[in-house]
Image (cartoon, rainbow, N blue to C red; front, side, top):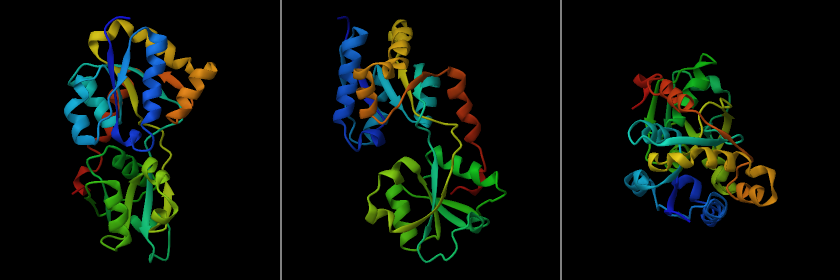
Length: 248
C-alpha cells in the first residue's frame, strides 16, 4: 500500500445509510492498492470547508464545478442512473395540478442549488415562466412552507422527495417532475493522485461486472459508472445564469 486516501461524499447522499459509503471506501482499498478512508461530513457547511482536503470526492453538480475550476481536481466517473432532477409540488388546496399554473406565479425552492435551474429549464421548454422564485435554506423547508400556504408552488430536488416518507409526501401535491438528464454527481480525484485516475476509472466503470462490485454500487444506489470528461462538467455552467432575474 502507498499513501492512504480520504473519501468525502456530498452530505445529501450519506443521509440515509452512511455505512454503505464505508463499504465503498473498503472496495476502493481492496482493488486500487491504496488504503481509502471514508470521512463523513455532518452537513454541507463542514463538507464545503473540508472537501478540498479530500483525495476522492463524490460531489453534486455545483460543487463539481468548484472542485474542477478552483481546486484542479480530476473528474473520473458519474453514474448512469442518477441525474439531478426537480419535482414540482403544490399546496394541497390547489385544485388543479397543471404545470401551466406556475406561469407568472410565485414559487419556492433552494436557489443556491443548481438543480433549481433544471426546474426552470423544464418549465421554459413548455413556455411556462414563474413570476418569482423565493429561496429557502433546505428542501424540507420548501415542502413545509408550500404545505402551510406561504407560496402555492415549489421546486424540490427529486432525490430528496423520493426519500420522504408517506406522511411527509402527503403534506403537498406532486404535480410533475423533470427528466432532463443533464447534470449529475461525479467522482473526482485530487491532482496529487492523478496518476491513479486511469486505474480508478477502469475499476469503477467495470465494478458492475462482478458480484462484489455490483453489491457495493447497489449500496450507494448506483447501477453503473461511466467515465466523465472535464467538458461535461464545465457544460453545467450554462445553467447558472438561466432566468436569474426571477430568483430571489
